[in-house]
Length: 222
Image (cartoon, rainbow, N blue to C red; front, side, top):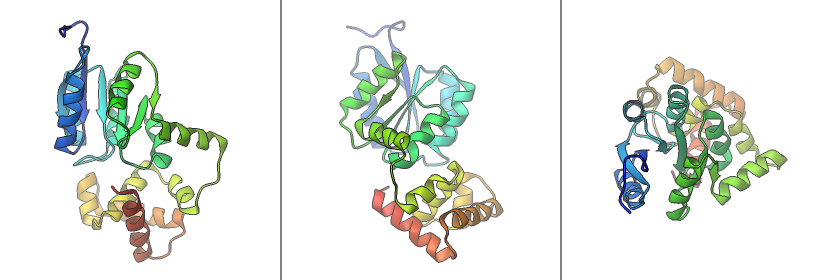
């Protein structure tokens, strides 16, 4: 079956790893009813590409070279409300599943899932459904049932999306200036976010903040 313009869903991939983007495009382009029409590695590049191409669906990772996948979802779903967004990420679904839904995404798959889940998820979204991997579904159910969570996780859930971004960058060893440059914010703004994070996590000193953030990032392997 040949791909035709009328029957083919156009898909954009936004991920910060070139090999991952290539792998996704290989899987997608093998399908008779879908094709990758563009790829990007950063929030700004992805936003421009999505605006220009107006695809049927976007696959977006939460970690990008510059900026945030979550911020990109917030921005693009307002500009292109008909766009269907599928998040595929290694980030902790306990923290991010609810956030990507609130941002406007219609699906969330953990990167540890089998490759065929990607195609299954794309088809589900194109058919107008939502799609979540089993681990994410369990996370959402636990959230609805109000299951007991570790104190640190409960504290992290109280952070805003931006504060969680800053916390993650701290865990990656970035300085205040580096975080400001990465997120296109002022040093003063990052310092304010740090103070808010310490307050919400009941942390007194900057060294404790770094320790908590580093341990959290290392534990989750991203």
